[in-house]
Image (cartoon, rainbow, N blue to C red):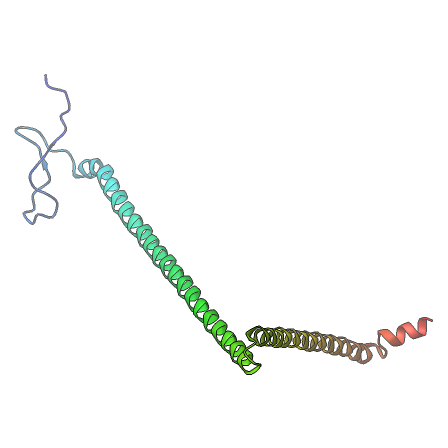
Length: 174
């Protein structure tokens, strides 16, 4: 007696082949299983297929992000190199300008190049120091005035709300 179960053999037909044939070849004399059982038996393969597609999709997305990151890093490096070259060119031009001015002034002083260089250096350093000093004074003065306006506004608000401000209250306490 043949009670042993034999799984169906895969046939040459594939799903969606347009012939209306099943994928399963039941062989000679075997009874077909129910459609629900055939579908249930195909679920693990379907899930594996979906997992494979999802993995492919995620891998493609990750690789796309990596490629974008590499492009960004490449452009950042290119920008840094370009900025470095640009700064170098500007520094070289500034040096040549200052050296030319110093040499010209030295030639006017009876070919004493060192005197021209000294005068130009003192003027540049003194001008820089004066500009920084004036800028800092203006910045701190502006900041102080802004703070004074802030607290004057608070005292005005106190007088409106309470009829007196913090200074008047302190004077009354003494």
